[in-house]
Length: 613
Ligand SMILES: Nc1nc2c(ncn2[C@@H]2O[C@H](COP(=O)(O)OP(=O)(O)OP(=O)(O)O)[C@@H](O)[C@H]2O)c(=O)[nH]1
Ligand SMILES: [Mg+2]
Image 1: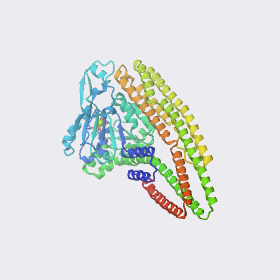
Image 2: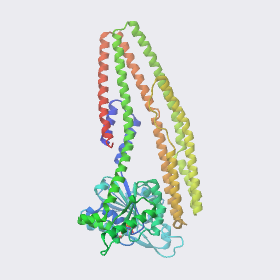
Image 3: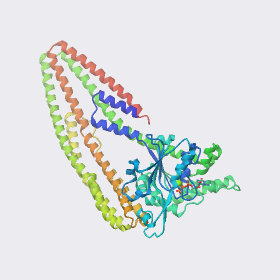
Image 4: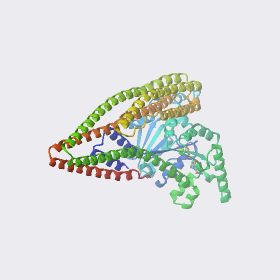
């Protein structure tokens, strides 16, 4: 796809149809293809087997239990696994003390120096396993210190064991990671409530989420709490990206049990889980991560079958990975193909015009001098009209642009930031459930007012455009497609979703948040950052609208104007004699041939970009 887009870039230049807007659109799409990553997040209470499952799904080929998994609390910090081709494999760790700063993890990721860097020796499994022990590291701090980091409730008196690291990044050469897969392993027990960025940004943005339950414990109250607080909101956002794993089915079996009794008990639990979570049984996967890992390492086909891992693998590759790929390809395809279709039309029009022009020239052969003079006069008049139209169009564009600049002022992210800062300040001061709810509602009301203002401001521009397009269609039969109008509903929806997530988070985390100035701040930072991002997107979309709104029309009118000019020139050359006319005819024939072959070349480019169909 990327290759074809690059070819198209070259083609556009060759036929003189390349401009900066188009160039930007193509570059944006090439970047999208390049950065094509898919994140699968694993969330659950502690000890349900998240890490073991990740080992079984992705890392059995290392021949070992790559990531540490053991009874009790194991993983202490969120761990992202991916492949960074720019550097040798590594483990990077961010100190837990950074929680006291305002800086987000996303921001820290841009500053590798702030992380403890451990190079991974992929040739030595033992040393790698050693390095990964860092993921389990904890330390004991005073109650005061723990409170400062937002890791202990306000009334804590005793020393507290806290994670040593706040976040871990693992770059590891694995075929799936190399293709752009990112895996997010999270620690059970409260991690979701205490790291707002994880809960409000990393998890909701993952393309798939796997919620893990264990058959030996069944669905406990704390599983249910987690499900209701964090996973349900995810589900409403990505209805097809959620899977629930009922892990440890091997524990339901013992040597005295018949195979069918075991199956029955698995079935019963699956059914019960589906009922409790109000889910379709099809997205619940009973399996044994431990058996699967061991079976894969030992190459034991029948044990692997018994572990039932294959069903989950099927779900991930068919439902998640390939559908995500399709969505991305569709996005790129829509953008590029519609541009190609417009270019195709332009060239076809050019071809028709030349054919018409050649016919005109041929008819001059047989015409009297008077008739030629008359044709010259008509063409001149037409040319004047087009010159005027072009001028008119440019004035309109000026007007349109200044309207859009006003619109951009309305959705300016600095204004958004101001609303958030003001609202946030008062919320941090009155950090109670009611205070947070009211404060957040107030902030979001303010943001919605901005969007309504923006919609109002954009109406005038929409009318202006409608008028211009109508004039050219009615008076000059120029019918080009209008670009899509800036549509504020998507941003409204996104804001609504964000408010909902923020309220959910704060109402379940007040115990941890109470009196934790820093945590309250980082919560506001995360919410604010996402809101600003929504408005930045709106701004980008408006700018795209600004650059696209009149460009096709202007291009079309300039084409017409050029055509008139060349027609005039031909007509003038008639008076210079028969030879000149012959020369003009052969020049035009050549032009026509060039255009025809350019159209052929373009036709051949559609298929490679549409290969998903
Ligand atoms: N019997 C059995 N034990 C399993 C299975 N999967 C995991 N375990 C065990 O359960 C324990 C916990 O597994 P982990 O993978 O560390 O669990 P986790 O969800 O990552 O836990 P935290 O990292 O603490 O959040 C380990 O001792 C695993 O060996 C399974 O399918 N069957
Ligand atoms: Mg774990």
